[in-house]
Each structure stands twice: as C-alpha cells, then as structure tokens.
Length: 247
Image (cartoon, rainbow, N blue to C red; front, side):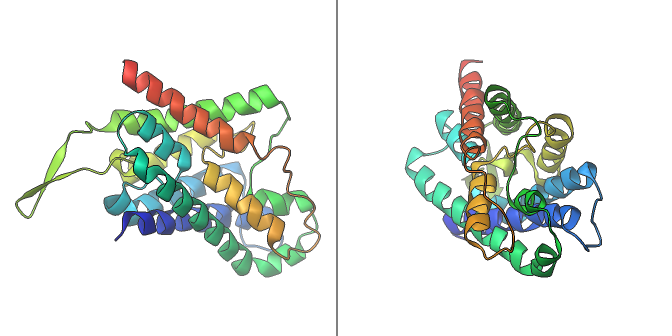
C-alpha cells in the first residue's frame, strides 16, 4: 500500500471508531448513551490499536500530524514526506467524521444538546484557560511522541525474504497493542481538562465536518478554541523531539 494512502486509511479508521465511541456515549437513544469517560478512553485506545494494526507496516502509522512533525524534527522522518502525510491525515480524519455522522444521523436528530453534538466531533476544555489547556495538550502529546521515539532504535532493520528492510517509524514502532494502552492511559490520566485531542487531524478535520454537515440545531463549532488542539500537540511533538536529540 502506498504510504500516503495508508495514512489516509489509517486516520479515517481512527476517527471513524474514535468519534464513533463519542457518538455512542454522548448522543441520545444509542445503546451506549451515558456509558462514561472510561468507555470513551477505551474506545480511543482501541481505535488507535486498530488503525496501527491496519496500516503500520505501510506507513509507520503516524495517523497524527504531531507525530509526523515530531519524528521529522527528531531526524527520524524525511521532511520531504511531511506535507503528503499531513494532507492524507487531514483528509482521512474528515472522511472518518463524515461516516460517523452518516451512521449516527438519527441519533443526532434525536439529541437536543448542541454541546453533545459538537463533542462527538471535537474536543473542548472543561474549564477554559488558554495557558493550561495549551499545556495539557502539549504535555499529553509529548508523552505520546516521546514513547514512539523511545520505542525502537531507528537504525533497526528486519529480514524480509532475504532482504533487509528499515523499520518504518511511527506509532507502529511501539506496537499496536502498547500504543493503544499509551493512548488509553493518556486519556484516563490527562484527558480531563481538554478531552485530550493530542492530534491536530483528530480535532480540526472533525470540527470542519461539524461546521459543514447538515446537523440540526448543532450550534457553533467553537472556532475560538480550535487552535489549541492543533498548536498544542505540535508543540508537544517538537518538545519530545528536542529531548530525544539531546539525551
């Protein structure tokens, strides 16, 4: 599979399942309504696991612009590929969000609360505070990206039919199950203040989908907050890269 297409598919799967668990818990008349925060954190962890399992061998399964930029800043990913990865991730996330709307359309119609509808797609602060919300997203993403950078020697190669192949670095470098556990842990431990976007594509593309889709009584898309789950995770990824390079 082409690595750019793999990033598109992987990110679409991530958002389909991740925003899907948000919808299942937040929207009315679903079988998972009001199931709680642990279900949401578990759903996102398993969503990352599934996406990495599907595309890890083809692209490294970055499925996250903060991971892509962080790896490039650490010198472990070619900057010439960054733009293509970011575009693929953003498009994949948008498609995943649209699919969630299609599958849960009747539940969006049955739900009166605009905040629940927006929360299906994108994150928001429990208590608004620009510095603390930004720091939460940056530090949580630092944990994720630093775990990826610490997981494997970038020079490591594997044997494939008698030929040596360099391992693709990404979330797949950690392994599908361990990286799912990491995301689960981040959600349980650091997700309370902001809903832990830790991924610009995960937040921005679904927020755009919320803005353009014909969701009844949806309210606004909270664009004044939208830069924090984009810039914060990127800052956290770069911080992880700096520590990785100086250690």
